[in-house]
Structure formats: C-alpha cells, structure tokens
Length: 120
Ligand SMILES: [Zn+2]
Image (cartoon, rainbow, N blue to C red; front, side):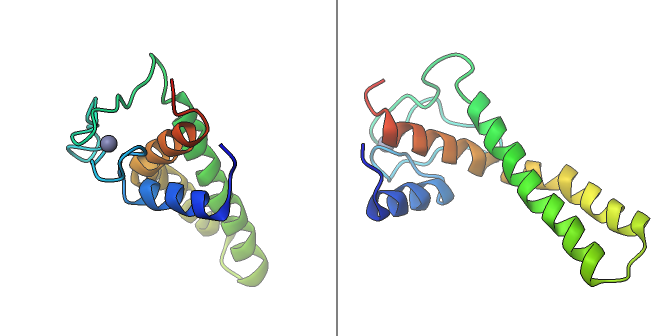
C-alpha cells in the first residue's frame, strides 16, 4: 500500500478510536486491557501470530521516551524547579503513561500493520 495523507488519516482515526483496521466499525477492546480475538463486525483476527503485539511494545516505549525526555529537558531549561522534583515528575509520567497508552499502542500497531500488509 502506498502511504498517502488520506490513508494516514484513516489509519490514525481507526487507531485512536480503537477500531478495526479492516471495517472501521468493530471495536478492538472488550474491557480496558482485554482485547477481542476477532473483530465483532468483520471477523478479522487481531493477533495474527504468536507474539504479534511485540511491535506495540516498541511503539509504547518510543512514545514514552518521546514524551518524557523532552519534557524533562524543557522543564529543566525553562523553569527553576529542583532536579529531584523534575526527575520525580518525569519518572512518574514514564511509569503511568505506558499504562494509559497501552491500548493505543496496540491499535496503532495493528492498524499500521494491516495497512501495509492486509493479506496475512
Ligand atoms: Zn472489522
């Protein structure tokens, strides 16, 4: 698939709405951390192979690093808050943010993978 702005918009919309990449209607999660095995609308199997969502862990890690490191340095440069407070704030953010972003990282991984490799 060729990545265009239209395709990218659809991928990001489905990802952040936690919707199925094929039909855009079925939801990915039945509870906060529990994912459906298949789409409730089109029966697309979400976990394509064992260990499929390892890539989602990389997305979650990358998003956490992209949030916390610049956040730490921006606060360090532009404010006069003590080092330990700044370090503690971003340490706490780096512990809590991945829990919040868990579902979105899985959805991003699934939607981007399906966009580039829909047949498997
Ligand atoms: Zn579906």
